[in-house]
Image (tube, rainbow, N blue to C red):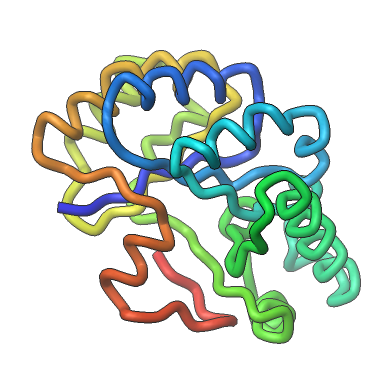
Length: 197
């Protein structure tokens, strides 16, 4: 039973705690990182990559891409992808738009850059509710095979919740895989310009 546990808006000091939890268990995570944070967090990104995790573009800053020009959207994505590649050595072929917001304009830019888009199917609202127990319960009560779970590695409460979520998901028979692995297992290939949830 494959699922993808994903983290937005980092890296941050809490990313290390999440990686420490993962290291004591099995599986791989996906981090949708902010381009502006890559340089100061190269060590965390490199460590995550070495652990088999996936580092994907979120955007350079946390802007609503639907409110930007095509040129500005391209810059947000291209600069972030380049920053990630400078650390990981690989070029990501997907991104998650900030807030999950996208429209036809964003889709067109994505297609032109050869990027697919990824949102989520489970949102424990850790960005709103900073209670580790509630985050844990929300994920464990909702999760099912094939889900993409949205979390944020910029909150202490999320890192705390993961110390229980990660081992308990594995104990229930879930395999923690990267978003790419999950989508390829479901669709065979990932299509540029398409939104996956």
